[in-house]
Length: 375
Image 1: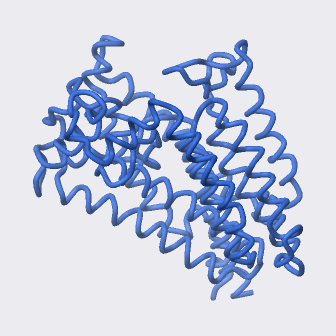
Image 2: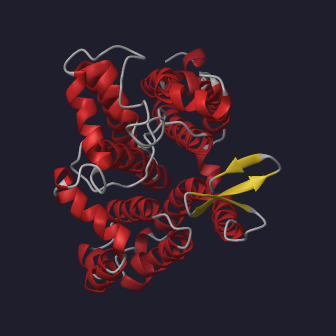
């Protein structure tokens, strides 16, 4: 291989990551515009408010992805504790009324001089980097319960407790799947990974069945058509959107569910608007682009020349995959309603920036693997 080929920047060499991300983000801008036009006009007297902000977010995020791809991934090991404690500090800061922004009864955003930031999104990336470092460092003893499992489960528990207070149960689920998935790939024993199960059952019982609105979500998930105008409102309207779209869709801008029928059409339920306006073909295109990303992530993890790279790439792939599965599963009625955005497509600056940063790191791991192989 020529020297010129070796020095191609990871941002450009990892095209199977770059192209799907740009296409998904472009689809996101178009669909945010379509899904938010009615809400935007009512709240801001223009149909372009959310679309313009999403376009700005995309520009910033692409720069972040470029920088993340430029930064040698092995150096994250030396700053993993800094990243970890920064994430914890931000999760603590969001609990203070003077620093947070409250919306929908939840305190999930920090007010940073006119800018808003969601620490829970950064916590996902911080957990991946720290677990990648710690699990790779302890490979010789990873099968020992108090070395391979307990310390990493404890870090997850700290994050979980701080995020539950906000409250944000969906993010805790994502963090748990990332942590357990990374530990499994790193070689932690299955019996150790399953050890919290006896404690998890009563916690889930209290957390779900002893809290009215969460119990209502479960019951509406099991039979949304029993109360379609109340507890089943989101799911039934989401399903109506997919049904109305058919194979080819109604066309961009022609959907009806975004007209104050389907809640959060430009964030949590934007996949439903895609189904209505772009139809089955649009849905399959979006899922195909995600599949390309996930397959590339798996390939990078399997062929990485370092344990840290392999474990970290696994975490980054799980991170994107879990969010896609939960968001699409909720909109299609196969999972209980939970507020999680669709990566690269849903409106939101913090999630887009962090998702792009994650892909930048994955790019660098992939490019470093190729360079090491051909050195």
